[in-house]
Image (cartoon, rainbow, N blue to C red; front, side, top):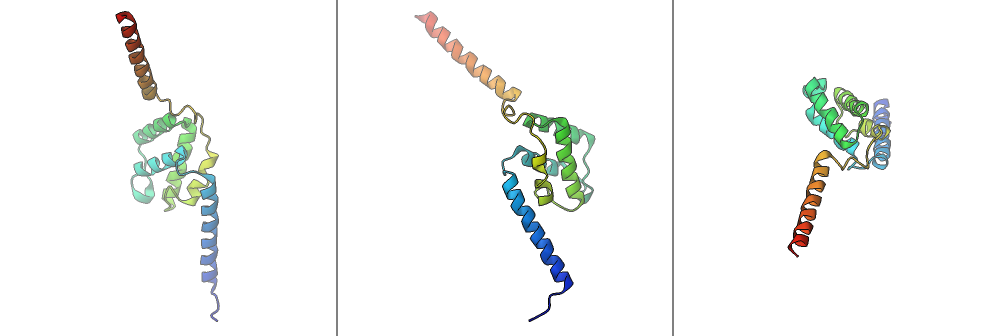
Length: 141
């Protein structure tokens, strides 16, 4: 039987740590979670590889996108910082280091995030159309 080297022990411990983090992440955050989706959007907007550069214009657009999704500006910036930090460490947005922290970011308007101005306008348009048709049929009689 071969002796296990300290380097092998270290690698095995790192693998075990990653497995524990992955297990916690799998239980902590749903793949459809808007914070995770927002983190992926942030990762797409970063430039410069590990430099993780984000222009002020892109940051502002991301913060506005986060607000539409139900995140407060501070919380959107927090997710941006998490993703930038991970990228600078050579990790992806879906890494356990990011996904294990995302549940700490509150969702301020999760239940009302669906009702964006566009959705509300669409609902109002359909309601107006139905009202018009009802009134048209009522007057025709």
